[in-house]
Structure formats: C-alpha cells, structure tokens
Length: 492
Image (cartoon, rainbow, N blue to C red):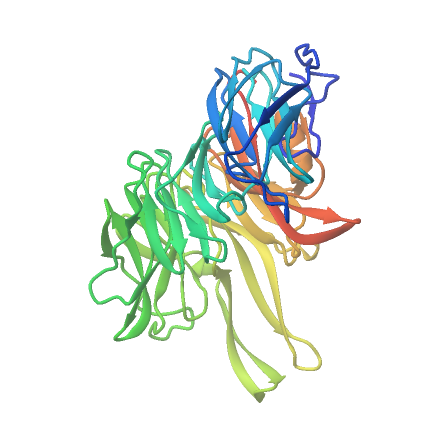
C-alpha cells in the first residue's frame, strides 16, 4: 500500500508524486452567448444555478442555467475530457469516462461585462487509492450508515435560495430535491440520512423525511397528544427514526421511535440519577444501524440511557457516586446534591453502528476552596455485549468530549475546544493510549492528513470515515467548520 498526501483544496487529491495524473493537453475554450435579455447599462450581472458539480467515473451530461444582463463567455484551460455545447441560457457539459486513478478538475470562469462567476467541475476516478474530500459547498452535512450517501443543503446563487441535496459518494452523482426550495434566511438543516438516501430535515423545528425515490417531502407525524417532536437519527434501511415528543400534561419529553412512519412512545426509567421520580422525561438521541439499540438521556440531570430488547437502562449505574457539596454562587451558599455519572445531552452518533459500543463523557463534580463548582469530564465507553463500562480517569485526558465509536471498538473523542480529534482502542481497557486522529488514520490507511480532524462516524466496514475540521484563518482557529470524508477502496 502507498502513502498518499492530501492537499487543502476543496476536494483534496493524492500527491502528484504518488499517483500520476493522465496527460491532459491544455486547451482554451470560449463560448459567446448573447442573452435574450436586453442589456442593463447600469449594472453587469451573471448568475449560475450551481457553482460546483461532480461527475461519476463513467461520465455523464449536465446543463447549467445561466442568467446574464448581457452577452457572456465561459473560459477554461483544462477541458479535453469535457464536451461543451450551449443553448440560449445554458452551458451544457458532457464528461467522458475517467479511467485515470485520480479526480480530475476543470474550472470555468463565466463573465458578463465586469461581472464573473466560477464553475468548478470535478470527476471521480476509478479509484485504487483512498479518496479524501472536504464538503465545503454545504455545511453541516450528514452521512448514511454505509457511508454511501451524504446529504445537506446547497445554495443556489441563481435563485438566492437553498435546495436539499444528496450526493452518492461512490458515483459522484448529485441529486437535488427540486420540489423543495428554502429561502436564504430559512432555519433549516439536515438531521440524518439512511442508506436508501432518505434524508431527515428540520425546517423551523418541523421535521420532514425526503425519500430519494419520489422527491417529495413527508411530514413526520407526532404522537397523539404531543405538541411537538424532535428527530435525531434514522436506521440504515430508513424504517426506524428516533427522537422525542413533547407533552404538556405532564410537561415533559418522552422518548419516541417511528416505525415505518408510525410514532411509538418508548419506556422511561421510573427514577432519575438522584433516586427521585423522573419529572422532565427523556429523549432518544441515536440508534444502531438496524434500529434495535437506541441511546439517549433523561432530562432531569442528563443521565445516559440506552434501550435494548424493549427495556431502558442507565449506562454505568454501578459507577454513580452520589455526594453533597457546599457551593457558593449567585443562588447563595447551600449544600447541594450531585451525582458523578455518564452523561449525555445533545450528542449525536455516539453509538457504533452494530449497537455494541456507546461512547460518553463521565462527569465528576467537586468544589474548590472558594466553594465554586468544578465539573470535569473524562472519556468513557461501554461495551453492551459484555456490560463492561470503562472510564479513563487520567488528568491529562480531562475535559475530552466523545464523538463516536466504530464497530471495531475504536472510541473517538475531541479536545475541549473541539479542534483536535483522538482515537482509543477499547480492547486496551483503561490502560491504553489516546492517539491523535491524524496518526490513527495514517496507521490504518497510510493517508497523511493535516491536524484538526475530528471523526463523527465510521462505517461498519471501516471503509468510510466522516468528520469535521475547523478551518484556520491567519493562524487562528475560526468558527467556520466543514465536513470531510475518507473513502477507502475495497482493495486497499
């Protein structure tokens, strides 16, 4: 196996020293199209319906709608593998099959007067080496359990709106849900996606499923008596969704699963972690690929729960430590009860796809000399097959946050700032070593990545790795985060 290096381009490519690009002669193409609209002398304008597109290895044809205030041209210096034609208001590209071992790229610059737009065209190769890509044209993104589909919202400059999009990362085919368009300021984001391409979307706290087959959104039904719902995950076959429903009598969340679209309320523990009657309810946060194992938390004190074989149980109840602390804060000075325990709040993807492992943070509460509360989080995980719960209570690991677990028993975490990822082998018990994600990927796949990669999901066969990276500007970390994936060929 060869070591490949990634660049910091939107779709990172293998090092030129390791994978040879097919020879492409540089040709320059210019297409002049006179718009049917009258020229507006007061302003130049050019718009595209899409600014980035990826062709599959076998090639294909795609038209791009162009709106211009006057005549427009399209220039590119690397289009031997693209056949180009035009209509009155479209640029039509047809890609030839790609038999090379690397992604190939063409950049078109469209101009109308002083206005310009860039169209980036890529074509996936017949791969023999791992492929690394950043999904920088929509964020956040979600990935299916098998790692074959990625979903999100893509911005259309031509219409100044968003469209839900699913990308088949095996073929590069990009599928738009053209029946649904969202205003630029819409509060919408993808929640999860199944292996059949069904995507769950949140639109202003209303949840819809988008079956890939019919391109028509379907509202997810609330249980009778519920005023609202939350949906967080979907099984691989799309038949099971999990989340919570909110009720007002009594006022609490109740864990909910949907089987073939029909909501079912799941059982809740009778008591919270303090041994008191549960009052605020519980929420389901994620599930195994087959939907048979579900995890979540009770909403009184964020105690970690899991559902299996029709029962609900706390994770690591044997590790609970109930104690009192004298705390001085703006509420005053008082003796208060705390429970050291495995906790879970809004975290997604914290279960392995086979349902065997759940990764979590173990919260330990104490106070300092000034009676200020101290909450330290230690990395932990449970093997539901053996029932063994492990906490890595080492000071140099304090405040690390869980991200996901693989079917192979690798637990993934991030530092407190969520700018660096780490991996831990559960077979080492409590005596193992935390490894930087960059080093882990190099050891496993012989791929070199820059620092800062966090892992959010690993497919069951460990051939697809999905995560996020926080980009830097002028040497500083910024709040701008994009998703990435690594796709490993079967023969690698």
